[in-house]
Amino acid sequence: MSLPPERASFYLDCLRADSSRLAEVGRIGLAATVPSCPGWTVDTVLRHTATVYLHKIEILRLGRRPDPWPPDLTAHDTFALYDEARAGIVEALEQAGTSLETWTFSPDDHTSGFWFRRMALETAVHRIDAELAHDIATPVDQELAVDGIDELLVLMLGGPWWAEGDTEHPVDATVRITTAGRSWTVDANATSATVTSGTDGPADAEVFGEPTEIFLWLWGRLDQQLVQTAGDDAVVTAFRARVAECTT
Image (cartoon, rainbow, N blue to C red; front, side, top):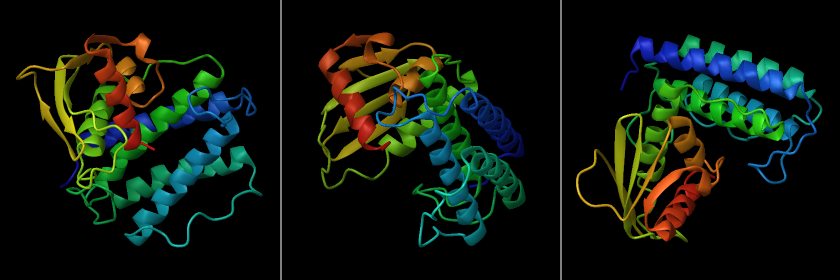
């Protein structure tokens, strides 16, 4: 699976913009606590994101996950580490292109193109984390947010992770997510989560709203009362908990 060049450029643009914003917010204050990640500070967010970037740089270089990992980065200045890593991931993606065979966690896509999307979305979430710490959150690019909803539902929630019933939130219900003219219908039970596009069939609960709101709610960055829902509230709560199991 090869990512179209225009899509790769879009993801790189988002990655550059959000990683730059994260650095900017970090310089407001590293000690601020992050309400969306209990126990984290803005310093933690920058260091975590830098480590994610470095990990993906190595994956693109090696074609596999680096082992051992992670390296000891405690002696590195936070901003120096982050700035070097964010420049490095953009360079690594540009050099790899979109068709290089490499390790990913996708069952279907084992090309470097996978990491263009994933790094753009990873950065958007952590940029929000840092902004929430300083109470200055700004919207996620709408196109990226819709794409991020699709990634989370189809790849992460809908992946082949549940066959053993290894979940504390079996849900056993149908939930529909709708935003920006798109809908995803999730049929979930203890051993699967099947995701289809569209609005066919009844749903036990629905969640709808603006793309940034839905994207951040799915990622646990927005409280349930801040999104619009219909149907069984208990199903919505259990569904969000199930999503959390595949995003941590």
